[in-house]
Length: 196
Image 1 (cartoon, one colour):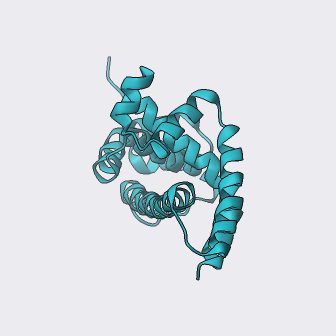
Image 2 (image 1 turned 180 degrees about the horizontal axis):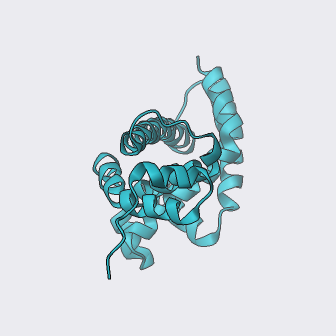
Image 3 (image 1 turned 135 degrees about the vertical axis):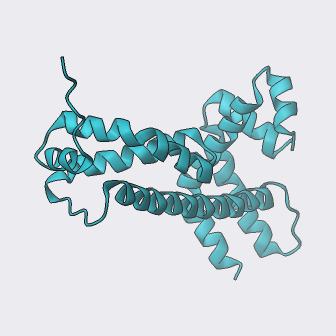
């Protein structure tokens, strides 16, 4: 009994464009591992690397009838990975810069002392708004956030005090900042404008 030769990549690509799910699966299985390694080396994050691979292949499947690949399929995939990785790193950098600014904003209005009356009034108003939003966080998240930002405990100290893992503490702080950033975005913008 003879074994049928595997279809060539160009044949699989044509079958994929025609809507053949098994051809899509064959191409996915052939490249997912190599692409994952490539993405992970750049991002150092397993979930992000997996997400990027899935995004690329989902996009290929959704656009299969309009695909216009003028190079080899592998070159097309590696170019797609490169753009996705660069985009993800840029988003990370933007988010980190905004998070840093937001944390400075929170620290400034929760802990800073001020001399002029105008600043004191603004501080009082903003502190009241921030305190209200913090009070609406889920109880465990609020406890972690307050120990982090008000008591200035490290993640390790909070983890020990609340009998949580450091990873859980980090996740609570990060999620709390995301919630507050969404709700307080306008006030942060006003604060920046008022201090220029």
